[in-house]
Length: 132
Image (tube, rainbow, N blue to C red; front, side, top):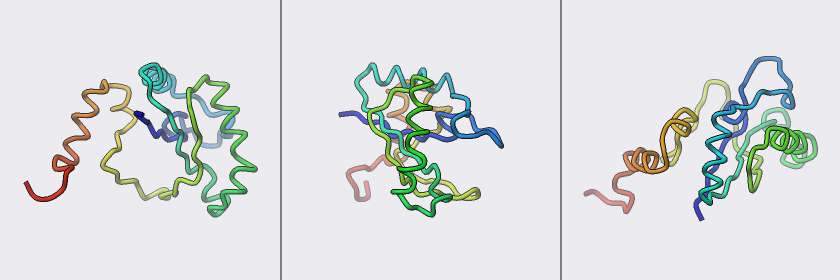
């Protein structure tokens, strides 16, 4: 099955300072694109680091104090998803994630699936390994 892992804060939400999680604005165009992928049969998993810093990586506390806010927000904004995965390591304000299968939100909304596959292929042209 084709699966999308999508971030929550700053990807599905519009981040604004001093706005509670439940009141964050939705990224409408990204959610619309996500719905198109769902129609194409993709499994959608939301992978979030929300409150990892606040609760020092304690997943039980995050489940207790955070998960209901996430599900309420997703339902309120009609975001399709199959699973919510909490516990994504937080890279901090000055860090970033490096992944050969990652695309930016702007690429997700502006490129079609075939274009995304071609873009990702550039990151690992020798995916079978070795020197070619």
